[in-house]
Amino acid sequence: MKSEFLIEAENLTKKFGDLVAVGKINFRVFKGECFGFLGPNGAGKTTTMKMVNCVLPLTDGRLTVAGMDVTKQAREIKKMIGVAPQEDNLDPDFTVFHNLIVYARYFDIPNPEAHKRAEELLKFVQLEEKRKVLMDQLSAGMKRRLILARALINEPQILILDEPTTGLDPQARHLIWDKIRSLQNQGVTIVLTTHYMEEAAQLCDRTVIMDSGKIIEEGRPSDLVMKHVGEEVLEVAYDEEVLRFLRNAFPDARLEVVSDRIQFFSNQPRGVFAHILSEFSFRAAMIRDANLEDVFLKLTGRRLRE
Amino acid sequence: MKTGRVSSYFEMPKLTYRVWRVWRRDQDVFMKTYKVNFIPPLVEPLFYLVGLGFGLGGFVQPQEGLLYIVFIAPALVATSMMFSSFFECTYGSFVRMYYQKTFDAIITTPLSLEEVIAGELLWGATKSLINSTIVLVVVSLFGLVASPSALLIPLLSFLVGLLFSAIAMCFTAITPNIDSFNYPSFLFITPMFILSGTFFSITALPVQAQVVANIFFPLTHTVALTRALTVGRLSETLLLNLSWLLVTTPFFFVLSINLMKKRLIK
Image 1 (cartoon, rainbow over the protein chains, first blue to last red):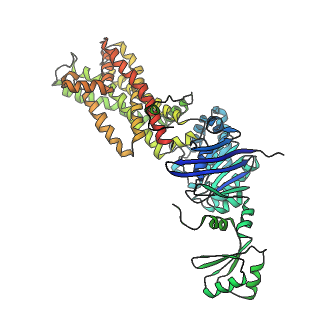
Image 2: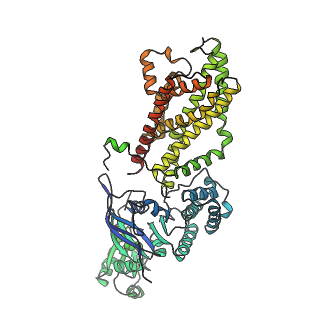
Image 3: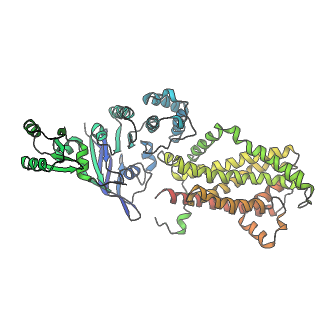
C-alpha cells in the first residue's frame, strides 16, 4: 500500500504583530496515522491546528490538506475535517442531542440523516442517557465526549483534537483514548496536540515536539526516547557523595538534578543500573523506564511557561 | 492585507445560503423560551398606552394634528424595532461571540465568519419583525391603527431591524467588554428614544437638534414612516425617510461584517 500524505506544511509561519507564534515549520501527516504535536503552553500547537482548520490565515509558507490549499479551498477542507477544540464551545441553550443536530446543519446534513448519526454518535461516546440534558448538567468528561461526538458528525477524514483530555480524571481520559484508537482503526487520520507525554506515547504513531513556534524534534515516540534519553533511568535521593560515586561509575551517563533527586540517563543497554543497585544501596533509589516526558523536558527545559 | 486602508472596512462579504443556518440556530434558541420572549412586546406597550396615552395625554395638546395617544402608538411600534434588534446584536451577539464561543464553533464548519455575522444580523432583523408586529397588534386592539397601509409595517420593521442590528454589530466589534455597551445604549439609543419625534413632534426641538435628529438618528426616519403608515398619511417626504434607511443599511451591514473580521481574524 502506498502511503500518501494528507496534510503538508512548508515553512508554515504565523505572526501576531511582532510575535512569531509559528516560525517556518515543516511537517507531513500521512493518511490514517495518528500524528501528535507536543509542546509546552505557548509553543504554537493550537495556532498550527487553527491554520490546518482554515480558521486562521497564514502569514507565510504553504499548507495543503488533501492537496488543497488552505488559503483557497477553505470550505472544501473544512467539510472533511472534524475539530474538537480545547475550550468548551458547546451551545449552552441546547440539549446534548440538539447540539449535534444544529451542528449537523452547518454541514448541510439532511435532518433524518443528522438524527441517525446523532443517535449513533451518542452511543459511541456513551452519552445516550444524557440526550435531553443541558450543558450545565454535564461533567467535564461528558462535555469532552460530546465535543468529540460533535466533531464526528460530518464523518470527517481528518480529526483534529486540541488537548482532548486536559483536565479530565483518569477514567474519562482512558475512555477518550479508547475512542480515539477505535477511530484510528476505522481509518480516520488523527492530529492531536497534547502536553501529556503519556497520551502521546499511548496514541501517536509519530510526533513532533514544538517549542517557541519551532519544531525541535520529530519521530516515533519510542525512537525519540531511545535517541535522547536511552532505555532506563536511575533516580536516587540527592546526596553529594552518592552523586560523586555515581558519576565515577557511569562517566558517560547524562545526569540531571531535579530539586531533591538525581536522575541518571544511560545510553547503555538495559541492565547497567540494576547491577550497581545489587551491590550498593542508595536512599530512595529506583530504576524506571525512560519515557517521552524525559525527552520533552530535556528538549524544552524546565522553565515554566505561561 | 493592509489594515489601515479605508477600503478594507468595506470589502464586499461573500455570502451563501449558509447564513440561514446561523439564523436557524438563533431561532431555535428563541423558540425554546418563546413564552418569556413574548412578554416584553406584549406588556410594555400596554403601560405606555395607559400611562402616557391616557394619563399624560389628558394634559398634552394634539401633536401634528393627532390625538396624543394616536401620536405615540406608532412610535411604540418603531421603538420596539430599535430596541429588539439593537440589543440582540450587542449583548446577545457579544455573549455568543465572547462567552459562549459560538462563533468559534461555527467557523470550524464550512461556514465563514462573514456568514456567521450576516446570519446574526438577519436574526436581529427578525427579532425586530417579531417584536414590532406584536406591538402593532396590541396597539391595533386599542383601535389606534387607522389605515390598511399599516400592513406594510412588518416589511419596514425588517429593514429597520437590519440597520439597527448592523449598527449594534459595529459596536460589538469594537467594544472592549460587555459593560462598555453602556456607551451606545445611553449616549445613542436613549437620546434617540426621546428625541426622534417619538413622544412629541420633532418640530418642538430647536432647529439644530432637528437637523441632528434627521441626519444621525435612524429612529427619526423609522418613526416618521411608521406613523404615516399607521394613520394613513402618505406623502413624498416619506421617500426621503425611506431613502435614508436604504442607503445607511447596506453601509453598516458591510462595515459591521468587516469590523468583526478585524476583531476575530488576526
